[in-house]
Length: 346
Image 1 (cartoon, rainbow, N blue to C red):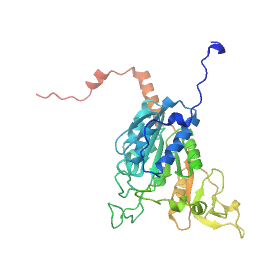
Image 2: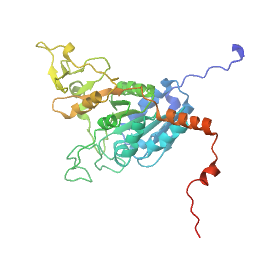
Image 3: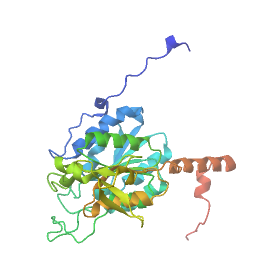
């Protein structure tokens, strides 16, 4: 075929191409708007056909996401989005499957589905919206609510120690684990791009505000003066440094732990721990996931772990199927149903 007869190239996709005609119905000021805007901005830049995207959700405020994304999608059942998304990705590995879920949906009723999807390394991109509350059901404490949280279901304060979604994902052997914040738009977009480029399971916790039922959940990180003092921006290959004047950092201790040090008086950036997002073992990322709970330590955001050397579940599953077909021939459903143990009831 000559170049003269080739069809003209398709115009590049834009953010508008991923917007639907549905009225976006979240509470005014909800952090979900910022996340939706970031995802709709990033998808056109991934070089993937719009019809190859699938967005899957469970139940919760975040789970309205598929209605607002002009892609294929499923609004499924409570906590089961990872299981249904796994089925889609297993049978159609060519599709780009994203999961939108919340801290309650993914970590309470859906906890088992989440950890097993991550350990299998299914090629899904999971966005966990963490507002530390059940918003859709009007303000009960969630698996990520802080100890002592006073909510409608815990008027005297919750007694549960909260889940740390990042350490849970790392403990499940997730091959990509990251964190961002709804209002840190540029950082969020860059994090989503890195998640999209990852081949296996990509887990992104997005800290977001619920201004109706848990307003200010992350103000210690998002307020202007707090960002530089309390947030540690992770960049692979760069020292772990933070502070308004970039005068504090994390240093490795002889016992393998880390400590916060003040730069100066003989301590320089060369003394600080250098971030290694590609470390083949998970203990380093797991250590980082817990520093925020210690007095004087910052909250790390960015990519904590990105290890791309493990096979994807859908690839090894389909390879196994092809190997068996090559060895034994195509299957016979009728023969399968009549095989094995049977009982005759008289």
